[in-house]
Image (cartoon, rainbow, N blue to C red; front, side, top):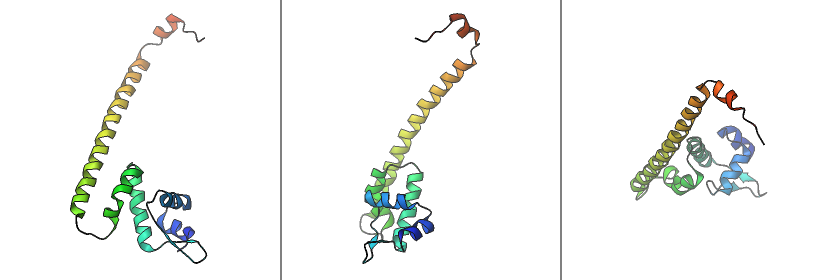
Length: 128
C-alpha cells in the first residue's frame, strides 16, 4: 500500500512514517516508480513504534530493541526482552525522579502563592 493508505490504516501521519524510516525504525519496500510500498508487517511494526513512543520511550531505545520485539522469535529473544524490560524500568525510574523534583517545585510555588499578598505589597518590588 502507498504511504497515504498506510497512514490511514495505521493512524500515523505520512510525515511520521517518513520520520520512522529516516530513524531506521522501518524499511518500506519500493515500487518500480520509487514510491514507498507498505506491507502489513510494516504497518504492524508502525503500531508497535507508535505505542512505544506514546509511552515516552526514546527513539534510541526503540531502535535498539525493536527487531527483537517485532520480528519472529529466535535464539536469544528472551535475553533481549529481559534487557529491554530492564532498560524500560531504568527509563521509568529516571522519569519518576524527574516527576518528584517537579512535584517538589510545584509544592514550593503553591506555598509561595498561598502566602498573603501583603508580603509582596510591603516590599514594593520594582523591576529594572
